[in-house]
Length: 368
Ligand SMILES: [Ca+2]
Image 1: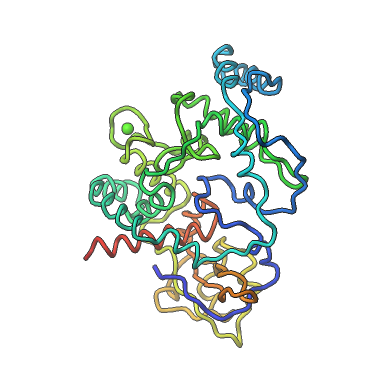
Image 2: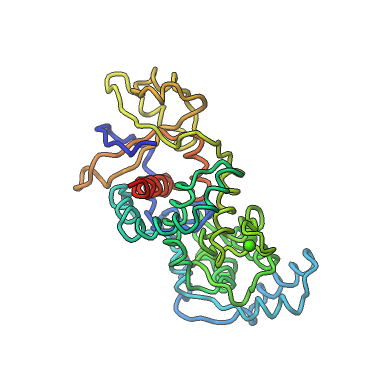
């Protein structure tokens, strides 16, 4: 694994969307970044200041009745559970489009996560849970530093698992998502709310992020249903109170996302400017597309390890602010299929590289 290298190369115009997407610190797990993408706001002016219960909302009660039919859940319980959920104005505001023209900045983002508190807490977490981390690597092929990196970036090892009632968060986004002409994520959150109500959790009490992500690894309900495992063998899946369950579940998620044991996540990228075909290489974004030979023939200089890599690679560009306005030149790495697997956890190259670098930093501290 290699750190991002800073190379002078002009960002190409079709990457414009990178200039416009907000660098949210903790994007909720598996919430597609489109849910947080920046658009010019056409949001209708909705009252975002006052809370109310969904018991008075016909659409919410119809949703409860339909879910009861589909899933065979108790209708009275569903109507009461959804009816007791409250609209949370702060959550609706969080989902409003970001400030227009914001430019991402990898060096700023990196400094937010690769910092002393997370490194120290991660070191303690690794030492305290070394057995479970080793077992996860044996069973799923995912090394400890990746799991430790994810848990650090998501919640600082359980310190910040979110303070909203998940039922309130999901109901707010299912029934009152701040829609724009281009963007309406309410179907996504309706599906998550349905899933949440079938998980047999403490649905009235459990807390999570503003988007309804839960536990040490901030799993959305659909991920909980698909990938959560009972890794400490007590018969209960508990991603809030059992670090072992969180560790096993993250490893299971990554393995299910095509994680390949032993494969690096990144290689360094440097360039021969005379031959560089940046537009073609950046077009697939973070999707691994090019063989080592393709990259070499398009002006990427590969180190020995990268040159021998089997399988597709992506040229990943991370902005460091706007170079015209005091920012730096972009950073680049070559991302493997394992880089891409981490990005399925949270669809951001900035998030993915922060996970990798935090884990690597803690690993090197552990070896001291
Ligand atoms: Ca358990």
